[in-house]
View 1 (cartoon, rainbow, N blue to C red):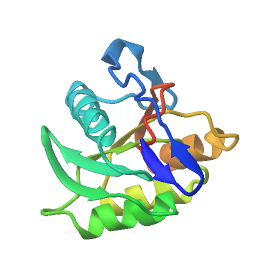
View 2 (tube, rainbow, N blue to C red):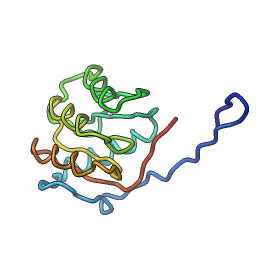
View 3 (spheres, rainbow, N blue to C red):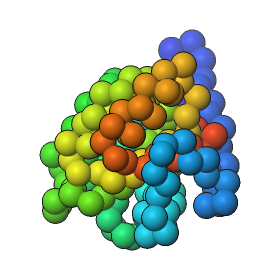
View 4 (cartoon, one colour):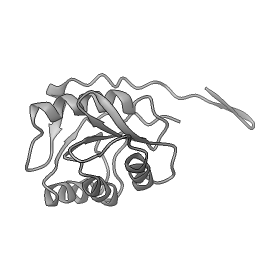
Length: 148
């Protein structure tokens, strides 16, 4: 809950407990078992980061987090800049869909190999195409965890 001028903003907590069996692979390449495990961990972290949240993970370690930006691509750039080690070979979680392909392109520059996101944008196909062009795996959860 947040107090705002003239009222109160109440946001419910979405159930972000997604099982790996629920993931929808939308790219030509599906994630490896190691990528799935890292994606699931990254997804759990993204739920707790202020939106627009982008989280880079290796194994079970968050290595870079971008948050609180008006642009998802800026969050992706910040996550890469703030990373405490190389982002090469990491996976990315996004708390909401990518409205444009630029966030996926930025992830590719950082060396991300797989992405987990809710999906649901009218431009989903553009982001899927971008992931395919970069040889990345992408999965949709169908659940947004956008946090204010």
